[in-house]
Image (cartoon, rainbow, N blue to C red; front, top):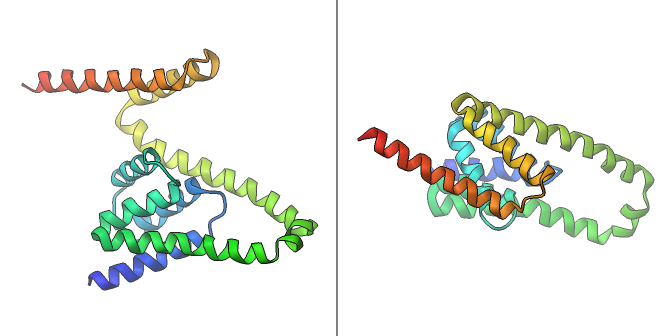
Length: 184
């Protein structure tokens, strides 16, 4: 059974990686669609947690997403399987493009196609943000308020993001202390 799971994990992740344009956040939204909605290997809350882990770890979000999903589903073998399946398609595509770089660079139609794909990528990212935000908003309005205040502090007041993160950590610690004392 685990061999079938690894095979399906490899095929699914390889397919997503091969046909995803636009970076890690696009593949994360497609992983959610595949692993949460279609295959039902994980639920939506777990997916949000896995995305948070993938974003906070150093490195590419797509690889980190594959690592955490692979580990969740099949441990170390899942990590190796999902990572290999995520890395192979871009490696092969870049290898081919590098051979024909000059032809790609000077082709007006290909350049227009790639520019058009950027609009699709933006739509997919917006859809992923909306889908993931629905779960957060349903659970906790405080998170939405903190997010908007952090945006205002960073964008309009030019407060360094490091201070905003430290402030949010302090808020989280205060919430944990309050909740633990309230529970006693």
